[in-house]
Length: 367
Image (cartoon, rainbow, N blue to C red; front, side, top):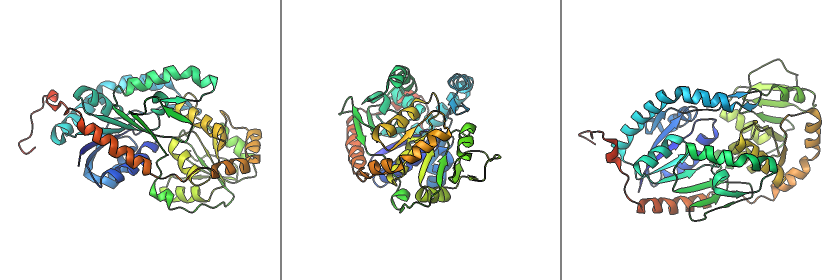
């Protein structure tokens, strides 16, 4: 049994949902302590109680379905002194008390910096590192952006010993000893659903700012159930819904197809249930742009930067084609994930012990 520190990014819910599935697998054999930021914290705290510690995180700022990179960086720098101090104090105390053997991070930066500082073996489990650790097939416009994206990933996550990367796209690891590619990680709640088609379309938006999309939907003869956007005056065929996991999964199970931004988790769950996907990726959010391109490349759906009535009609005319391609997917199991976890945890335990003495914090008498 290993002592594992599991740290989760809180920008969006995809990281928390994926981490829950992995944590459920790990807790059967290992002792875990969990840190989580922003949206991930209340989600995991409700499930795991005192094992979850809240840390500070950062999130993208959006406007008109575009990631405002400059504004996001300015806000990050303004908050950095306070947030870094808070995280250092909380995490240092936790590490001194628990002294984990290794850290597993779902793209959470503080874990990677502590891993670097204290020589804690680190496993990354996320889809974003696919962009830096894999050979990719990309269109020209994304190839030009990739060097900057890799630099950004490296800045936030300076150290990982190993990677477990879920993927539905055509990717190959640069180093197969360090990097394991697995099928998308699907929750048991999704696996238990029996999909059907009740004629409506599910719309889920990470960024609540895509007003132009609503104008295109209003001109369609389909009915839309929209999650993630504030209620506004819209056509009778658009119904805004408050987020409820139970209701969302029910709608995901019963919809005809899905319109989303480009988040990996919802894409994976929709594909598992056989739903074609129309992606409207957040502009300048490279991961979402890559996911959207991969949908088109695999024939599971399509994407557009700005939804128009004409594009929507063209997409719906190809629904049979998308469904046929999705049916060729082999059933996604977590067998590869389980094997990769066991192998890489064993490798981490062979490494030198972390240097917790560098924290220079007195141990508690009962520690």
